[in-house]
Length: 346
Image (cartoon, rainbow, N blue to C red; front, side):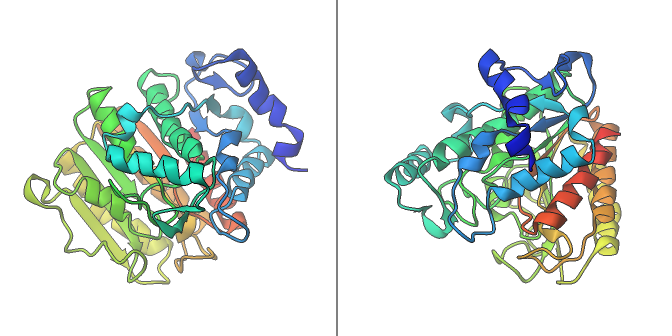
């Protein structure tokens, strides 16, 4: 029996009945008395129906939650309840026309938004707003001291979403919206986005390509979907030098990733000195993933997490929120997230 069958009421019903909007520890203790790692998850994310056989499926999240419960990690995480992101924040990144198109496409039951590689159901617009909003809730929890850092187990993913177009399973660009939210609501000037998904985050890069206040670092398989992310893509205008891509050949694993983080990410972060760190945590770079051809192990993800956490601790008081992107082999995904969360917690 998985978590959703056995313990769904314990995790979700008390919060729903109480109408609690602030973070609460999973064992019932007030989050403000804890300094733990936040965890964004809600059953609403399971309502994004991508169709039978699609790799980006609800079971991705149930596998993660089950694994964290089985390993005894879930009870020590601080539950951060998501809420739908307001259009005020979504439209800092996406055009109002695009947002309305997502809404209408979902409500009409067309089965996808813009292209068939971005499947959507009637509930997907609401779910996508809660995915973006879940990351904003995590940011708030870090900023008010309720948690020291946070992991967001959300879907649909976001890093391929452009300002006016869906693609690659993504509807709204969750991490990009969070970066704007950090700057506009919390008045922090500089945001570092680290993207270790096996696919290049073309949407995130495009949104901030001329922006010197957001540093985008991506390590990804190349050549591969979506065809962007060469080392020559470094930004434009005032944003020149604030995009850093590390394309790697298929088959690379822990050693190559760690080397890039130590020799390229750390010096870039030292020069940039971020005020907040976001991670597009795609675990499709894991060994045995269904879509990627990389070989990063759970131990490798531990090392990457440790390096990024160290950057946040050195430059911005540990302010760090990590956001699920890809990862399609359920066993590899769950094991990788477990390794990732263990480092965040300690």
